[in-house]
Amino acid sequence: MKVILLGATGMVGQGVLRECLLEPEVESVLAVGRGKTGQQHEKLNEIVTDNLWDLAPIEANLSGLDACFFCLGVSAAGKSEEEYRRVTYDLTLSAARILLRQNPRMTFIYVSGMGTDSTERGRMMWARVKGKTENDLLKLPFKAAYMFRPGYIQPLDGIRTKTKWYGLLYAMMAPLYPLWKALFPKYVTTTEQVGRAMIRVAKQGAAKSVLESEDISRFGQD
Image (cartoon, rainbow, N blue to C red; front, side):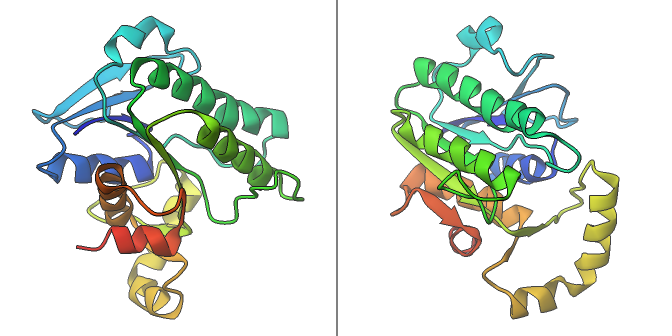
């Protein structure tokens, strides 16, 4: 399986990249982003671009791919709906359409979030925008498309978030994670499980197109 990964330097993307490099059935990984991952591996190729909203200049390098793991995302905190939509919706759909043009048999997996509003009419701005993003991705004629809606994600294997206050939260939560998992198993998962789940769903498919945190953990089990 040949994979393209967008958002490989973020916390979720780091976990997905790690699992892809460890998985024998993943033949190659093309990481596209604004910066280098800092990883070196025989399966890994990287393209650095300042303009992720327009992948046309590198479109010729985006063919022959079996799956896209789309892990790009930003927090809605402090952003207007227009600002948040530009990154969450506009960028995602632009990239998806270019990848579809080059890879009509591709499986597209998008990291959304627990609480996403599929009606697009709720009170929470971020949930409406995520909902429209999911809905419009599912309308595209990919071989298959899956929306991943994780809840709390515990970073493992030395993976760190680039957001300082998130990092403090994860550091405090790490010792309590086993208890948190025991009390709220439907709402927590790990970077390992998200990565493994993406690979397995891309390879095997899933019975539904929207996978909640509990589904992700199940697909991501050892």
